[in-house]
Length: 146
Image (cartoon, rainbow, N blue to C red):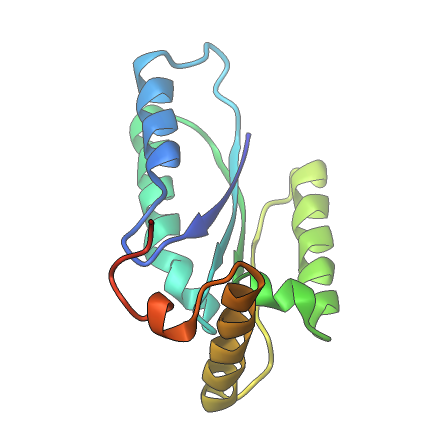
């Protein structure tokens, strides 16, 4: 069983938590091995660690074998950057480890200094907002939905 999800600033996505609750309430007879691909918007892939530990705990408590982990830092921006190949390479290694049943933990991020990443991320989100008619000032408010 492969879980692919983003890490939100406030924790695991509600849809994932609801799915885990339903899986706990009606567990499969044959417990599949659980592997995780998680991506956060922070530069450091280690920011994903607490969410991975939460999933490990879920697996221990519900007797699911735990498989491979891929922690990606830098959010979706890595896929639109010259460093996309780093993510693709790690995804291939992650998938190969699952296919072979030789599980491991992998991580990747953009190889940038933190200051440069923060500037690039700000520019990325400002341009993303423009695409949908949202200004930088609107994004800096707590009013995120109209």
